Every structure is written in structure tokens, then in C-alpha cells.
Length: 428
Image 1 (cartoon, rainbow, N blue to C red):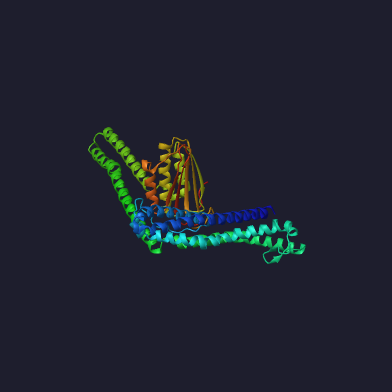
Image 2: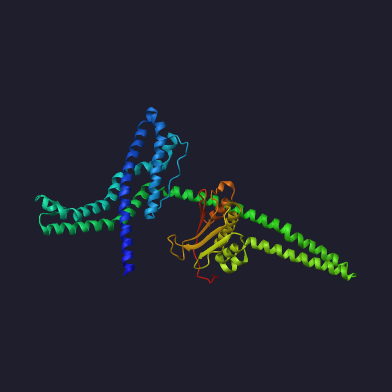
């Protein structure tokens, strides 16, 4: 029974929150109603020259309103639309007029106060009018004459007062029930007007994939050069020395003691060459990652770190090998950053896979959160390795979010879209 009551309270709270957001969206529509005419005024002043100065700042203010509307739609209702290309910071009136996103913003600014504003006004109006019927009518109907009406009910007797009260309850319930749906409908309406055209989104996606492919190819070439260099300077050099030592040992067979010393040195060289090869393989794909998965591989990194590293794994199964490898080396880089730059003692790592709402699923995305208790103030531009991690994730259409205020803590969140395979046993 308590669980049902808790769900009911949670549902009521969500409905009341949606009503409040509808009211806020309506008020913000009034702000848009002021910015839109200002932009039109700047357009009308273009022939006399004054508009060339007024249009760029007015267009920038309108774009900020549109961006915030897109952000609210995504945060409140989960409705996301592709934003247009940003206006250049030094854009003149000519560049603004040539920008397709500007005209979409302007159309939205004129229609939003009328259509969107009326739409989001419905739930708050129903709730307020319903509250009037419930909280006011029972106490004022005796003080008013026969002209007192509530909706379609003439309130002048106890029976009609009860009818008005019940009708008020109905209006309130209707407003609460409609608010979440109206908020989503309003968000879709805004996306229809504000989202970049499909062709522009496809062009942007193609450009992103082209850049990502170039980064991936460069990274692959760098990796191949590193492997070649490591082989040449490490295992290959030791194997050449091993061959020379064995050749020397064959010439010392008449002297058993010298031959034995040469063979022992050859054995040591072979052991070093084997260790070099193992280190090289570990740098390409650690065996523990292949055999036991991402969770145990990250735990091994935690054991090797001199920091106090705590790992929480919420992975129901194995992920694609390429994704696990990218996440493993990204975590390795972030741990190295924390050890070098943070000045802290503790790092918390959380690995989770789900659909983005916290629910585990077979599809969705891998989320990796790395938090240290250091001094904060991390900046990718200062060469802390975050740019390399971001480039590694871009190959998989992944993202990196950094939150590092001065004084700490620093939290880096990685997300990689991927699907999970069937569960596979992993050590806890």
C-alpha cells in the first residue's frame, strides 16, 4: 500500500511540475514576443542604414532565446532537435540575412507567443479555474446574487454549489493530467519550427563523419608507427643481439665455461625480448580485457595505480571489443591525468550500460564516470590528455563531458553508443 501511495505522490509531483513548467513557458513566450518585433524593426531600418548596426545584436538575442527553448525542450520533455549552425561572432547584417537558421528563429518568434503560448496556457488555466471552483465558490455563493455562474452551472443553491465544486475538481484533475502531454506537444511544436532542416543535419553529419574518419586514420597511422618503433627498438634489437650471442656461443664450444656464460646471456636476452613483446601486445589489447571484459580490466588498472581507486561496475554483459578497448585506454589516460595533475588521493570510477535513463538494457550507451578529489580546474587546452581521449571517442560517435570547477572535484563523463551482448560471467 505504501508503494502505491509513493507512486501516487510521485505522479502528482510530476504533474504539478509540468503545470509550473507550462506556466513558465508561457511567460517566456512573452519575452520572445518582445524580441521578435525588435528584430523586425531592425529589418525595417535596413534601408536607412541603422538596421545594419541593430540587426546583428538583435539576431544574436533571438538565437539565444531559441537555443534556450531547445535546451528546455530537451531537459523537460526529452525532445531534441538539431540546432542550426551558430551565427558568426562578427557576423554583419548581410551574413545574418543569408543564414537560414535566422529566418527559422524569426518565424518561431512570431508564432510561439500565439500558438505555443496558447497551448501551454491550457493546463495552468484549468488548474487555476478548478481551484477557484473548489476553494472559492463554496464560500462566496451565498454572498452573490443569482448571476453567479461557474462555467455552465448557475451557483445559487447548495446543490449547484456542490456541482460547481465537483466540476472544479474535474477541471483541476484535467489540468494536471494534460500538463505533461501538453508540455511534450509544445516541445515538438518548437522542434518543428527551430530544428535545422534535414538536409543541413545530414550535411553536418557527413562533415562530422569525414573529420572523425580522418582522425581515426591518423590515429591508426600513429599506432602503426608506434608498434613499428617499439618492435625495432625493443624486441627486434634484442632478437638480433640474441642471434649474435648464439653465434658467438657456437664458436666457444671448445670452452664449456665460456659457452655456458654465453648461453645464459642468450637466455636472458630471449626473456627480455619476450617481455618486450608482451608489453607491446598489452599496449595494443591487454589480455585481461580480451579474456575477462571491461570491468575486470579497469579493476586491474585500479590495482596498478598508486591512487585510492574505487571501481563500480554495472555492466550486464560484454560490449563490442572495439568499444571496450576505447573505454579501457580512455580510463587509463584519465587515471594517468589524475595522478599527474589533480593533486588528489582518491578516484571513483563508475561503469554503466543502459538506455540513457538509468535502466540497463541491451541497447543504448556505455557511460563511464571518473571523479577525483583533486584541486580541479582541468582544461583540455592545457594538454592534459583530454583532447586525445575525445578524439578516441569521436571514432565511435562518443562524447566527453568535463566538470572541473576550481577547488574540485573533477568529473569526466564518457558516453559511447553501443549494444550489450548476452551476459558473461565476470569476477566481482
